[in-house]
Image 1 (cartoon, rainbow, N blue to C red):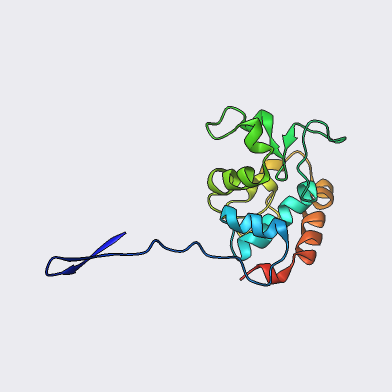
Image 2: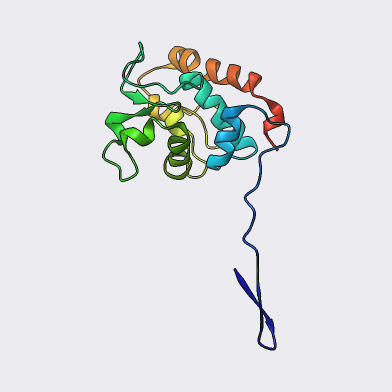
Length: 158
């Protein structure tokens, strides 16, 4: 980056440093999600969704409960495989998958509807799960998500 100081003087500016996760955060998944772009409250939401979806395990077709979804985010192959950003190898790399989810699926951590949540990540938004009904919304979306939020390492958000 270059800044002009006037009188023809030019000063090369150092590149902006990438923000570091909170120093006390020792949770590997939270740090990985931070590196993908999920910061502060968005980190807590992303961490809780990935815990709910996969318990932070990188699930693939060999998982006993395989449903056509891959990785820690459980991205549905049938719904997304035609997208320019989708590849099986990226979906099975937690870092790549998290960056893709951040950029292309959550609108930089502001859109959580594919995972059944409102844009702020605090309440149920069943618009993608209309056929399920209240009992399944509670059992498969909100109860596990709220449990994950209760165990999220608070020192990882700021």
